[in-house]
Length: 203
Image (tube, rainbow, N blue to C red):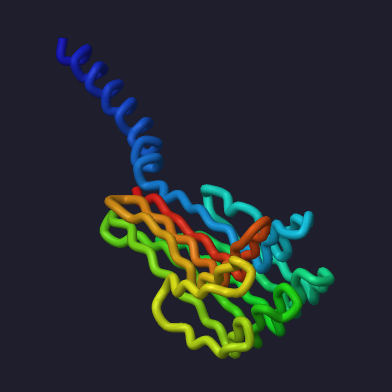
């Protein structure tokens, strides 16, 4: 009888040991999201997405892409378009930047435009942060100082400019943030410069 009990106990213990690593592994997995795009535009019958990393896999990794320059006559020109997105450990982060930017024939222009986003796990809780850095921003001939997120500026022709546009959601074990350094909107016009999105789901 004791031998039989011991055999049953040994079998149960073996089963527990065999399955517990799988269970603990699945419970301890952090998942990521992210994407960065230097220039997105839908305007004047033109649709484009330049220096776009594409979506970061849920398992994380590293994505990067760059474009030396772009000049779409009458719509946008820029140099040194660069985007990166990565996820590992307890955080995901994305960055995007352009230089020597001109939109819509100089209606909006800047020397440097950058965005950053980050999502982090700490103690099973998710938190997100984001920022934009814009140097030499000029809109409709006026110099613009960048301060708080989501600065809205009205431009001629029913066009609006949103500077350091940020949208985020965070609660419990998951969070996501998207930063558009510049967002120009108007009749049949939608242009985003330096977009960076990051998200995370904590175990």
